[in-house]
Image (cartoon, rainbow, N blue to C red; front, top):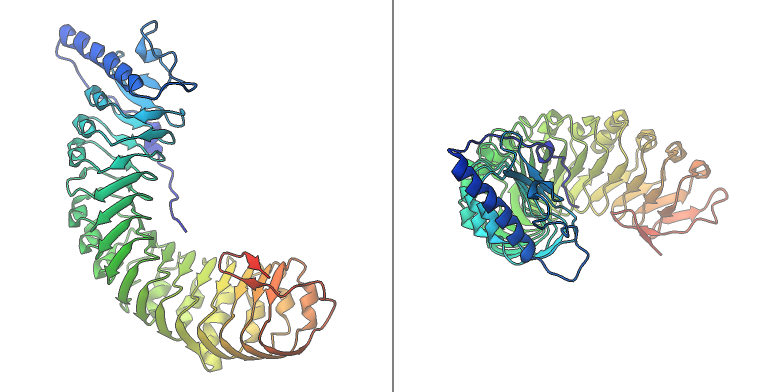
Length: 452
């Protein structure tokens, strides 16, 4: 599951701040702008319908498609907006001569080759988006020369090598997801004091998460999914009071979550820790993160009971604790479920493959009417299915397979008109109540798809 998920208004703004020392210098510079644009066109592949066909000297370059010139200096190029222009070929290094350029957007094309280090000469550049191309090679260390850069998006390419430590210190938004980057996350990221959004998902990054990330005062979005990171989650991460989304799923992280981990995370809305080697208890301090909407801790080694405080998260719509060592032996161990009845947003309740035992409490039937998905399979649950399960009118998927349930399916099942699939395989149910012969016992996976 990927997490990127922000609209950056800075892409839609152009800021103008430049002067020229003389008319002669201005004339030379504007001629250089035209030459740089023509060089860019010349390095693109030919033989395809081109939106740049009108890029020629028969018209002024400020009128060419995708070219934006300034108001204060009307002959200077301040933006190239060429996203989704069906461009292929190489990126010309002569773009580094567009000294007034503030925005360069070449995203969603078929460009190949390397990121020209000459782009690092663009001291006025505020936004660079080269995402969704086929670029390869390294991220040039010369990019550190873009001292005004706020937004850097190189995602969905084939970039390799390590992330340069010299990356632009002025960044607010950094997205490098879905590349082939390796090595460690540079500790120098702690110097990016303006950084708000960090997305490094889907690379081959290794080593520990640098504790210096916890020093960034405004960091809001951190996505480190699908890498080879190891070690524990640094304590400093739990102190980022501005954090709203944090995902490290599909790594090799270990260690425990500190008891007071959530004390400062009062803005947190999404936390995804799936498929690591984390252990210990789920801390009761999680109640401080009352804005949490998505809580996913699946496929780790968390143990003990689910704390009552999980049930107090009134905004949670996705609760996923699948594949842990969590247990319930006595009725009091299910108290979190009773508390969850106060959450009117809950849609996904996924607690399969744990060690939950005892009887399912009747409070399962009191969960939100917005609930669509329940998975409690592969546990040690006994007793009968709650008789009022039919109260969950919007339920679409129900998986109770591989438990030790007894009795018959309650007659209230006939009220579940939206139920698409359910499984009660490998239980000890004695019969079926009501007209349910048209339902099939599907197994349900975590994405909601089903197989016979």
